[in-house]
Each structure stands twice: as C-alpha cells, then as structure tokens.
Length: 328
Image 1: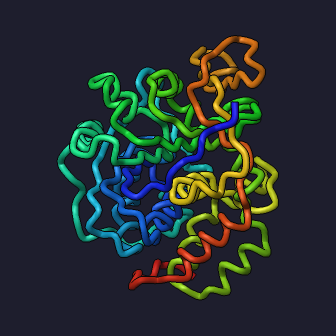
Image 2: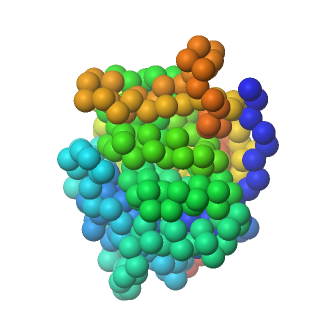
C-alpha cells in the first residue's frame, strides 16, 4: 500500500541519545525556519544518558537554541543491559570534539513525564522525532497508552527495512539496543514513519566531495558537523564499508522537516524480533503480506539525496551566532 502524503513538522519533540549524528540532527532542527523544537528528551543509547544530556545542551547552545528544555530520561533499556556505542562515536559521543559545556542545567522533569505532558498540552499538534532507542517512548506509552493518539506523527530513526544491520547481520542499533521497547512502540498505534539505516546507507553518506563542500562553508557549524563525526568516519570506513560517514539521524530529521524528500514509501506491517538469538532487534517488514501483519508503519524506501544534502549545507552555512567548537 502506497503511503499517504505527510505534513511538515512545525512543532516537534526530539527524543535522542545525543552523539555525533544526533547533534547534527539537532542543528538541522534548530536551523529550520518554520519548525519549533518544543523539547528535547534524552535516552541512554549511543552514550549513557548523562553524557547524552550534556551533549544535547551544548549542541543546542551552539546552534542558538539554548532555550529549548532538555529532559533526562531512561538510563537503561526495559529488560536488557545497557550497551553503548562509544566505539562508533568516540568516548564523549562527539568524536573527541564536544563543544564547551552548556551554561544551563537540564530540566528536573523526567523525559517520560515530559512526553506525556506535552502530548496533553498540544494534542494533535506535535511531531515526535526519535533518534535513539525507544525506551522513553515505550515507558510513556505503558503509563498512558492513549498518548499514541495525541502525536500527529512519529518519525523513527530505527530498523533496517532491507534486513541489513549495523550492529548485527540483521539489526540496526537503536532497535537492537532495546527491542522490547521498539516492539511496544511499533504495536502501539502511534503514526510511525520508519527511516531505517538502509535509507542512510544509500542516501545520507557524506562522501569526500560532500565533506569538501561542507568544509568550504567555513562556518562554525560546518566545522562542528565534520569534526564530531571523525570517529564515526573511521567506523564507516572499517566496519560498514561506506564511502564516507553516513548520517542516519540527520536524514530522519530532514524528512520530518520536509517530507517532500521522500520519493517512495509504503504502509506496511512491521514487527520487532525480541528474542535472545542472533535475530534480536530485527525489524521484520511484511512486504508481501505473507504473515498478514496489518499495516502499522510508513516505511521510507527512497529519499532525494540532493535535497537532503542541500538542507544540511544550508543549516551549516547559517551560523546564527553559534559559538566555535574546539579542535584543530
């Protein structure tokens, strides 16, 4: 079934495990003229939750969005042990180039409470963009299942619709990190748009020519974007075998801001493998309807790569008073 057209996110909540590509996604959101970030909620994933909070605060400040509230969230998966990804993003999650610490503290309100409260305050008026494991969202749904009806759309960076993983042969990290949470979210009735690692791998790779174009901008945001992905670039070169570093979270954010980037998508039935086998975290996409899974997700297949990269370049070109990040 072909997916219905999506509307741009005007007011969004971002749930993130803030590491290098998450930070670039926050830059994109902060730079979008017609988009307001209502709140950022943080979950453990790429890095422990406290590090993710610090990275979110510092990135927002650098991006000129230092007034956006940041809410610490769940510090571990629902049932599994926490597994982080510093080997992908660096010990600080930012390739060793984290910006100076923010001058303000995070909110006292827990991320789960914030997700529920915001959905009540603006029912049908908020878009949720998830960039990390889905623990915060699943916990919120367990407390308030009707929250699923109050978000206008939920863009999920997670899964791999083609079955090719980056943490196992079949699973993408965000889903693998907390498969039970992902299974709850995918079965919840939330209006989900899945932007899998397969989309990033094909349409969001910063090849050498793209990196040169970014460097030529000469802005603090451009330098920040390139530097914080240094560790990711090495991981992509040696493990995922890409022609540069890919940006799964930014391409998801770009689609939320401008759904016109989507060239092809389908409404499909998707479930999550929660076993303790090598299939853990696989997003099972019933493309042919063989298992009779009712369509529950808009699965994005193809994206306009040129438009995505132009959106990224535009965001990095407009410094907007951003502070310089440290580094050579």
